[in-house]
Length: 327
Ligand code: TYM
Image (cartoon, rainbow, N blue to C red; front, side, top):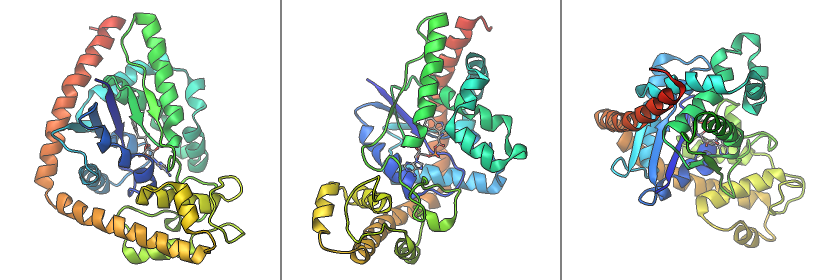
């Protein structure tokens, strides 16, 4: 049985990008694969976090995982900081990757440029190695992620191959699985930038966004120059992005949506898209609120999942240590 593994970091509020590009696809693997999902909270501290906020967002994310349909009876659900093997394997893997390789990571280049010298923390640089450790500890075959994580996945694979070549078969080579549509939801105010929770609030829609705010944000969302609803990422990036969002929530083919809006303009399209998103998010939010209210149950999910995960992770860590000659 193959293993499917992925996660979301609690560094801000969840956006529809996180949902449509990644999370939405996770529950369907349950029952078919061994499924392990996690909250990489140690990844979040590469930029300063308020401790109470970080704690709260970690619970929020566990609740979102359950809301979208992950079932703790079928999937292992863990919090990264509860399984110390992640940090230990990260240190080991640090010795099988070069500064040059890490320096080429696009996410690091973008973030370090934005943050300036005082924000260029070693943890930020090392982030992809911790991510490789996360994935390799659980022998993940498939890692369902959005497009922006593909480069990190390739690095994890390179590190695994290098280790295996030196010490014999130890780590499974992971593969990124990226959805056909929605793998890169773009910002609503600038379709050349990825929708991101760390940008201006007008540029993204949170999973927890209120109905009024969803309507306002879609109304303000930029469109392209002619008034036609056609999918063309190069010539019409803004409308193509809105079509990706539409298709992601309605589960329709883009071509069917285009047909329905033939002869109609942006106004109709944007207001109907807003209503579709309001309907879907309102229903997810009401389920989320119920699940989030029971923190004792969330603690039980975290503790049980993290204990199960630690068993798997420690075994792999011991195997790697043994191969290298670490007692
Ligand atoms: P994170 O928390 O930034 O994002 C979580 C998932 O959401 C996807 N995503 C998007 N997809 C489409 N359009 C967007 N605008 C968009 N924004 C985000 C991401 O691709 C991701 O799949 N480094 C990871 C967290 C992580 C991880 C791991 C993931 C740490 N260790 C091991 C998988 C396996 C991250 O920052 O994701």
